[in-house]
Length: 76
Ligand SMILES: [Zn+2]
Image (cartoon, rainbow, N blue to C red; front, side, top):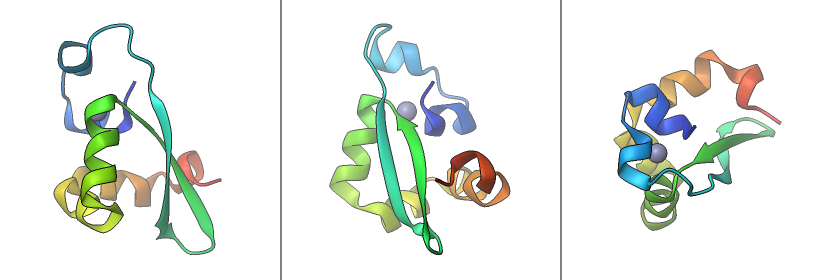
């Protein structure tokens, strides 16, 4: 499941279609010296690409909080 849709409670299958694969995306500015790995649906993958990492996190404060709270889950 898409990590952004999950924390925001979106119906990701409705928005993206059932069989679309998730893409693995990396955020470089979240953790110092480590990379945050996210699974993103097509919509959020494109959004991240278009807006950039910083604006993406501002737009999705719940995701930003989750990344900080569950560092060991997302950091690699
Ligand atoms: Zn999503």
